Structures are given as structure tokens and as C-alpha cells.
Length: 167
Ligand code: ADP
Image (tube, rainbow, N blue to C red; front, top):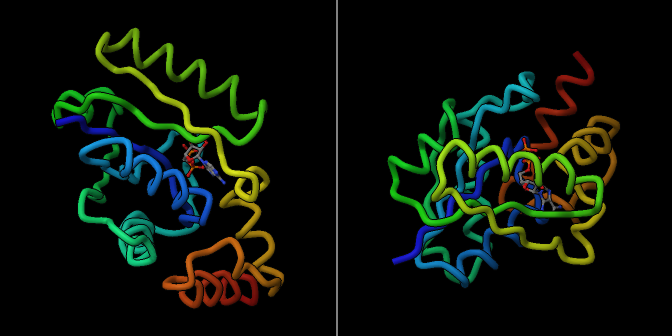
């Protein structure tokens, strides 16, 4: 039984994330999508509960999500990794710009806990330019994000962004 943990802010979850989740779910027996607090990004737009709910509802779009779990953590990733007796950390790589920070994080996690191996999955072609921040910017100005945000959550994502923008 091999368990993978896929951590991130998911503010909000995009089709780029969903692609990584579905591919990881084919490679591992269990995938835990860990909606986390990232001290480098302390001001998430969507509250944690809602980010988790978005991921959970986005999973409906996958053919088989039986081995995917959604959880949250505001502590050290390696502590969660140990607690769940996980085998790998999954990270998505979009471009070289992701690489340096993710590589550093992978080395640090391995140093903190020698069993914490990180596996990188390359983003698919369409996901390469896609980020949660881009979605938030486009939606705040009323742009069409239907190609980027799972259709099961798109109304909730865009309405909240527009309300904030108008307020
Ligand atoms: P954070 O940057 O706070 O860890 P994100 O939600 O931005 O959280 O990203 C979580 C993980 O998903 C990271 O490994 C990131 O590189 C990856 N990721 C984000 N967007 C995409 C995408 N469009 N395609 C593939 N991987 C992605």
C-alpha cells in the first residue's frame, strides 16, 4: 500500500491541480490532497474550509476518486507525513520557475525526515501556464475562467471573487 500526499494552498483548486491529483491517483494506492497553511502565502483568498470543500467537489469530475482523500494541516508537512505513514510527497512542476523553490523544499523535507521522498509530476501542456493567482485575477475582473476552474465549483469561486472586487 503506497500513499502519496499532495500538499498545496489550492486557493482555489484548478484543472492544473486536478490533473496532478488524477495522475497521482493512478500511480499510488492512496492520494491525500492536503490543503495546507503555507507561511509564504499567509493571506489566502478563500478560507481553509472552503478550499477543502472546493477540492472535494472538484473530485466529482474525476472518473474514479475512490482512493483520493482530502485533509488539511497547519503544521509541518513532514509531521503529517509521519502521522499518516505516507510514502511520497507529490509536487506539480509547471516550469523552471517552480523548480528552484520546489527542489529546495524537497531537500529540506528529506533532511527533516529521511523517508520523505518527493516525486515531481510535470504539468500537462495546458496546465503549464495555469495558477490559482491567475484565476483570481481574471475572475476578479469578470473574465471567463471556465477552462481553468472545475465546473462543479466555478459559480462559487467567481461569485465570491466578484463580490470582493465590488466591495
Ligand atoms: P503552494 O504553492 O502554496 O504549495 P499551490 O496550490 O499553488 O500551493 O500548488 C500546489 C502544488 O500544485 C504545487 O506543487 C504546484 O507546483 C502544483 N501546481 C499548481 N498549479 C499547477 C498546474 N497548473 N499544473 C500542475 N501543477 C500545479
